[in-house]
Image (cartoon, rainbow, N blue to C red; front, side):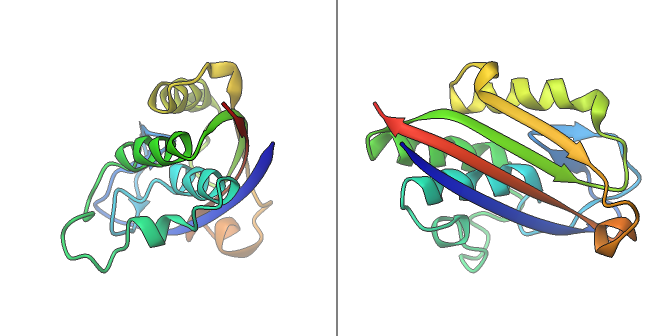
Length: 158
């Protein structure tokens, strides 16, 4: 078995949708980024890539490649990452993800996120854990400047 850890952060931006875990979450502000800025999927991709010793999301999908990944749906990136992990001979055992956001309240959207992520990765929902927390008004998340996400992924040989 191998374990990987991922972390990502994006700042809030006006006139953008808030994509988290592949779900369009109703919010006054979205997140700034070259892609759709789905901070949760980006952290999960890094956890999976790290576990498989495949570097990181920026290496495989750089924002320096012009328009190739501009505005891309992060679910497409997650699908590609799972293909890479499987090509290397591994399968997801489970993943555990935490979103840190002072706003909006995410609890109502977590089941849909888990379902979406499981579907994109081709695994059972029981293998995908998503949690949300605040930072008790501390730091950039607490000041409502952005959102961060953490993920751990456990993979095992097929």
